[in-house]
Amino acid sequence: MRRLLISAVLLLPAARPAFAAFQSDAGVNGAQFLKIGAGARSLGMGEAMTASAEGPEAMYWNPGGLAGARGLELSYARAELPDTVHHDYAALALPARWAGGVFGFALTRLSQGAIAQVDNVGVNRGSFAPHSEAFAFGYARSFTEEDSLTKDRGYFRDSWNLPGAARRFEDADEREPWTGTFRAGAAIKLVSETLGRRTATTAAADGGVIYRPSTRPALALAWAFRHAGGRLRYLREAEPLPFEFSLAAAHDWEPESGHVVTALEAVVPIHALPYGKLGAEWEHAVSKGAYAIGRVGYQGRSAPDLGFLSGFTVGAGCRINSFSFDLAFQPLGALGAAFRLGLGWKFGRKN
Image (cartoon, rainbow, N blue to C red; front, side, top):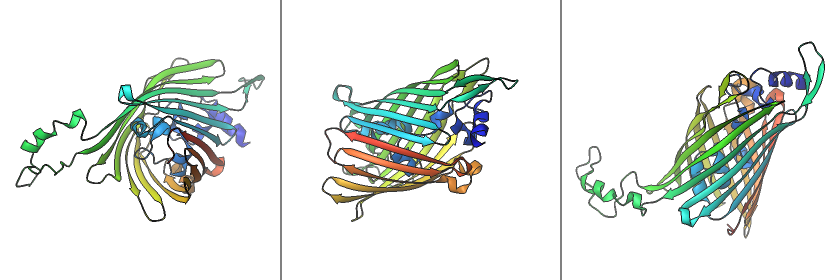
């Protein structure tokens, strides 16, 4: 019975994969699969990743985080969602000295088991398996105080006054409040959805910035936008993508027991209500080059439809030199639960 109900949602004129059953804007936007997210680490942290993502998974959350890759990095994640829905995400980050930054490539695919095709008089016309894909290409670069873009800061040292300050910046060791490290990136992607014999395709763009102030480099402040672009057209009406933007902050802590990351984020979808995310990650060294990882998080997107508990997420993983393995879980109330598995490789980097 549950499968029949979810399939009925799927066959609405706007036709969505089953995961759209608990998206608040499922009747407004196309390509709902774009909102599922990427990576098992992200799910374990409540998807509060805009300020903390780096490497291949940053292609989805914040392309600016690509600039954190020090060598070739690969990432793959598999998510098992309710009612035989499968979500795959594969990406790579490739630093290029000649380009002064890092290139990224990502493939996202959502697939579902066969669904019976029944006409308006109840006659079975066979079956079909809906699927959706997104192919993305991105670039990111880091900017520091030594870069040419910030060498003109001397002009401000001579002429800028802080509000209420009685003197200018005269000490060469003093730093203006805006100095620090910036990571900026952007990505373009091709989005496609197939339902039976019909396919809709459009283009979209993502972008974002991560800033770490020179006075407090453990703090990351970030902004990102996702899924900005065209519309998917199946028949006559065209549907917009689930465009959203995020403001986020993350902080790295170094207790004696290991490394801790805490993150918080506010997400503002254009066609749905704003919601928040919280996440934390603990990494503890168990031997040389080997680390055990635990994660917990909360995201408010599913809570209005599936209950407060559906927002909680947990995850665990391990990192051994250049290889990482992660698992994450999220309860989804009446729909069941979501599980995500992630694998990662960092070539030429052992810690």
